[in-house]
Length: 507
Image 1: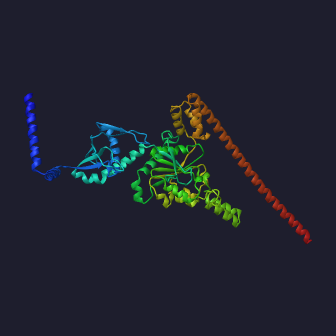
Image 2 (image 1 turned 180 degrees about the vertical axis):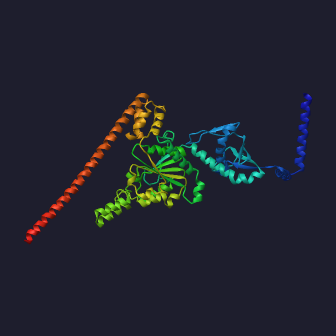
Image 3 (image 1 turned 30 degrees about the vertical axis):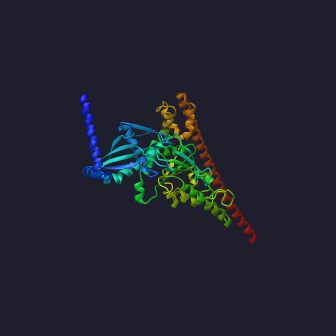
């Protein structure tokens, strides 16, 4: 053993002596040139090419580095050997990442790539207005030379798209409101936001399953349709009109759409917007991948049906009435002249949803809700503005089964046939059914029995009310007919009497 250490020490001494001779004979410039030539020869005969992606590019953060880190987090949790865990601000998920100086293999369209996370200590730096981190981080990408064009043309763009999708899914969704109208805050934003935590999903939404699948398919086609919209020359947006009686789940539908797509929601309050210019500014400050909602649009401002307004103005007669109707169509509720009034016009709202200014962002959905669709102007409802009209109806039996599963944890009940026979006639909203089930959620049998009783009562009342209305209509028709007959008899009698009086005068 002693001889071994003696031989090793002698060998190290010889190497140190040779190094001192080389350093004295070959100047540093020559040594650097030899190392550079050796590296080029190695790269010439190597079948791989390497790309370095540093965390900081000069003084700015490299966006590609963050994108690669997020992209690798989707696969590192499965195949990585050493992981680092992070949770970003305003994020509801924990992401995985490569540990220092660890590597992971990936593939794209049949091309094999290798990622290595390289972390080294940074040399001591001089004074700087923006001190750099002590560690120098970066990713090294190793690919085959034959796959170089594929990786540079498609792979990096794919990483950026996947990173944006992961970032959107991990971040908490926000609910925006324009409580200040169109005025800007200190940061230049007209919107105020709060975290959006609504738990509604399409699984919990009380609606016919076939209709839900149709809506989900339409939303998915929209979210994945960037190439289609570009090819057809259409703005990447879509409009939905939710209409129906109160309590049928229109707000829950909007929340389910946002949770399904992972979009933020902008709740636009038209009564807080004073004119079309403010409305345009609000639209410009909305982000892509968002849902812009205007609830109860028939109650917000005066955007009624122009045909009805014109016909009513014609019936009233007079030029003043005509100009009053025209002013109502141009301005909103309160007119444009009153101080603090609302002067949003129908034309401004149409441009907001389908005009040139609606194209200032992409991948946005407009949702209007109303309880009285017949009050809205047809120009607002046409395709291109409101592409899909969704009727939120009363609670049907398939929707009731979803509510029973949500609130009572049951899918089948003994009184199935009885409930199915009366539920359509009762015309109960999902909100009414939900309240009844919440009240009796601890006693399932009592909840079902009380629900059946109320459904029967409402069905009977509805049928009785319809019969009463039918009787009233029949009585009105008879009264009208009798009045017409009496008027005709009176006119005949008066004509005969006038003829007799004329004969007497002639005599």
